[in-house]
Image (cartoon, rainbow, N blue to C red; front, side):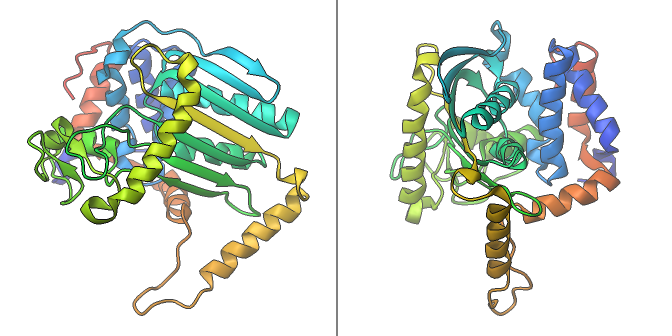
Length: 340
């Protein structure tokens, strides 16, 4: 891309654009803030495809055209609850579920919250980081709509089904967020939108043959992580996430396969929180001090690059594709046919 195809934005400008676009699409101010905060954080962490372009994915999703209701408690028993997302987009519903999980964990020491009837929750790290910053250990699992073939299969059957963990430390939380597919669905949709290829070995086209064409891959299927050789590992994890997602089946509309689980607990049930923070920080330091292989300058902990990128981009701002910028501007003007 040339410079004219890219649009620099300060953090304030990006936030204002995102919130205006979501209000123009019909979301109230609170939901517009939640959506924009999620995608802007992704952009600041260096994930452009999960940044502002994801707001266009929300508007393009068939669920967006259906009626929405506020997130509500469907069933509860002390530390546990099932939430009905009311067909609210996942970046809003999962934010509410995260807050509910934190509140129940603080009250009971442990919380397990399932969420159904929602869609497109975005980066799982966003929620686990919030849980860890509250001084809790967090786990978040996703059973997503079918986009990935089982190991050896040529048609989609499971979701990208990520799993994420959050741990409080003496510094930034340790957050581990991994999908079970060989390529992220959001990145695939982003590349299809702007017309760039995907890597080899991560997807099959509608004919069941390997492809690097993003649009063909969307019509076909992604592969589980590990590809054609070790894909049984990604497949096994995806199946486990799917089984956990079934816990939300009471809140899912007929035919829907997605379900989300949030778990959090107080470390101080086992040892004082500050001792836990200190011990995890010491383990991270020990891991980073491991002798390195030739040519390796640093052992990087999961999430470390994202924190450093966020710190830098908070000062410098972000850059987005001009097509995305123009499409969001059309949404802000109330044009749902954004052309992005």
